Image (cartoon, rainbow, N blue to C red; front, side, top):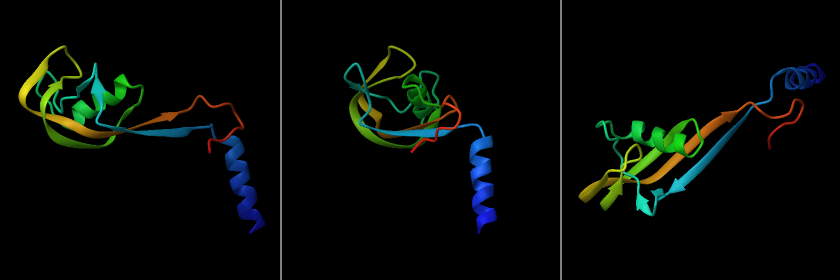
Length: 107
């Protein structure tokens, strides 16, 4: 048991410090408008959720949910869908940070 604990302690000290950050965005908006679930080029779903997460400073989307909306702004252009649109109800973003000081761990 001591050997196992010593191994984990050694790995914690030698391995580069990294931490994951996760954030849920419920009803994400830009300029007060819901985010369209498609990009200007036509890609929908994960591609649009990833683009939103990158705008917010995260690496990519882990999860997203869609819903109908009367209006939704495309994240990669100034275009706005009016009428029967599909917007994000939720986008869960994550990123891995490796800029923590050596020896400190994220809680």
